[in-house]
Image (cartoon, one colour):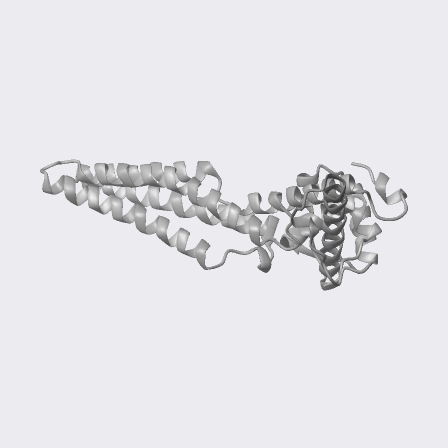
Length: 118
Length: 168
């Protein structure tokens, strides 16, 4: 899997939503809203953005007369998230290499990581 | 929460990247925390166990007929409500789910509680105690409230290490 920094995911609110969804199969709208401390409208807006990008799937149904909404990462969204995490790890590791070169200390970040093209 | 970094062009510096990785780990930890059994649950089940043991020791049919079904109903009802509540809120992704070691820990907890309860109860009865049922369930309940949260902490660590896109 190649690392790829994703501007859409990296925005703080969306990063929090996508990170939460990455550990979940499905997550209820209220759960996401409460865990992230967002308003209904703010969460709806971000979920719509992620859905438009093909990163999130939204499921709506009724329990009795109550509407329920759940969200999950689509396969494309999960792949984009994992590539984004790899890109962040690469940035951090690269800075470790720069630090090592400057201080003359050899660390675990000194090993080249093949296939991390951006 | 704002979306300021979305306005910047290009990848972040290493500090921002490290902060983002920390945020990812924290948010995924929230999902794992939400699906684990809360500490109060172990105390409620322990209280139910002791009520059953104490009721059995009275050997009075009326007490047995009232306390045991009530305690069992309370434990089962609470367990079902808790599982459904968690299931409706969030379901853990397959990659984060518990594997063999997690299942062994849960089965091990059950055997520990049952084994200690029966051992203490039969041991007390053999020693001539008239409250063997209470002693057995108190020992089992103590094991439950100590080992239950400990097993949850172990499962939490296990799931955090297996989560998708995990990053410390």
